[in-house]
Amino acid sequence: MRTFTDLAELVAAKGEHLGYSDWLTVTQESIDTFADATGDHQWIHVDREKAAAGPFGGTIAHGFLTLSLLSAFSPQVWRLEQQPSMAINYGLNRVRFLQPVRSGARVRDGIRLTDAREAKNGMLLTFQHTVEIEGEERDALAAEGLSLIVP
Image 1 (tube, rainbow, N blue to C red):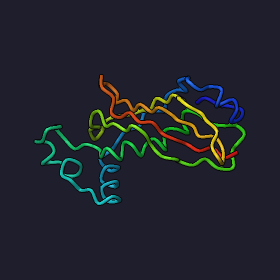
Image 2: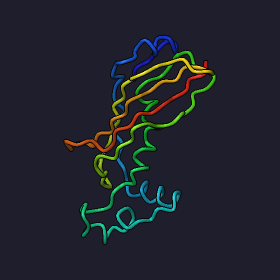
Image 3: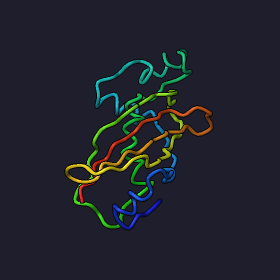
């Protein structure tokens, strides 16, 4: 966990790798719950028997499930001691699903602060997220996440 005193100190870290989240196991239960929440019950995600004979040798997480984990990973990597009035998910750039995450796999996020610029209501930060799969050479996901920090 990297702790910054205030927003100015975080902005000064532009260009730096901030660290890694903890490893998280992507369970079949979380995949099933995500399928129920989104209505995406494609067999590669939820039909264990059919998926076992399919191209991935078992069920895989939805790409958007992996993407949604960025919200859980970021607070594990960095925080501000002086809390802003708001921090808003401002969107995403250049999202790529590079490799499927199999049920039972462990993933973590590496985060780099790539840009910081003033916006109308605060500071717009761009973070490069790279979600790794434990024991795999290829990453699961690469994305730029945008956060608007309102002092």
